[in-house]
Image (cartoon, rainbow, N blue to C red):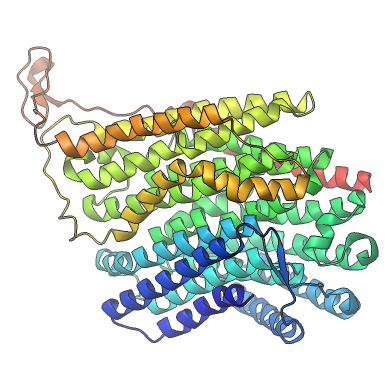
Length: 636
């Protein structure tokens, strides 16, 4: 228990310390040392509890619970103040409703608001702890140098780095608290902390656009928070049959019909937090924030909290029509977001839509909730976290070096920034190529959906197949631009030790290690967790594992070859059909006009544009969410 409390409390202490650190060098030392400690503690949990199953701890609750309620009321007052200041009255209304529900819950059902054990750890929370502790900490380290450069490029933005890093570490503490809490009141408290911290980080630049998007994220997540409190009230009112606010008792309850209603409400909160349609716009708006914020939200904190809670409640959703509806919300989100990504040339928007799509796929697995799909969902969470953090941080580094985040401007990056291009290549490969983890997980999901009751299984397979095919299109376009060389280009990358990219090198290694070690990860952590929940588990056949490892070895030859043979590569002038062309690809066209030859990707905006697809996808998902509520009520 001491290690769990340490991981929750230590980042808070670091956050408070960083409020008083002004110098970048000292801040870097504090953040790097803290990241090392947090990452080490996360690894210790793996070594200590990986083989012990679920372990519960009766942590002190009375004083902690009172403090949490007081902080929740303080946060509500903060939201009301900010809403009044910026005239966002919807945020005020939702904050008041949520606070009123919390007060009603505490006043009416105080005797039922006790969990037998407030903290716990199992294999799934170990996985989440590693993602938060390692990936989240590395993002924080990367952010120190990034924010220094950010303010150099954006002198108009007020320097609030002390507040920025304070919020980053509070965010990490809240995520640890969320995944290690067995008391659902505690889960809700940490859930709301992530909502507030994301609001502060998204609005960091204090521009009109940043403030607007920060409030959009706040409002949408407050909607989920209201649903979460409603679920807690229902659980407290039916404590005798539902298990109350004790997560373990709730999931073990034999009265599935009673549990389904709060599960669907909490699932709705997960949908808003994970930015599934129709709530995806808040995550897209979050792209105005500095790149480390985007990486943190997408890979190791905010949206992962949403899918974490969905996967936790998968056993409740399994075999229910309400669960199928939630799964369809995820599947439709997967297809629509993947399709919209085709039309985007802004790298951060491509990453954002890809994140939304993959979170949709995880939600689809969680909603249907069979043992094989839960296994696939956890694999997706792992591989998405490492690959997407690499891509976001890489995009931020590229933007600072070339002054653009447009994919078209990344042409020839293998010449201009060879090391970064190789890391980006590995990250993109990790998202869609065999034998990297995302493809392994999709393979497992398709196999699992085959066994789902017809016609639901066929619908999910069709959506997954179409969505996966679309992802190949937009990832391959980006990958092609990185290695395309059409004109003479100068190297802009500094030496290996001159670039502040240490976190990127480590995360690149983690992407490769995750693939090489995924059989061990599966057998040590995921399979025992699934076995404990369902009494049966899933695994890939040994022959398939051997094939994938062989493919991995072959695939790694490609990026390595870029580094080994780039000096001996011959650069030939472009052939322009016999016309005389300059080194920058200008040539004499018809009527004596000088023209420039260009290579550009297809974006097919008229077919896959955001304006074309987002609204229909949002409407379909809204209907499916309402259907899940209705079906949960009918089941009762």
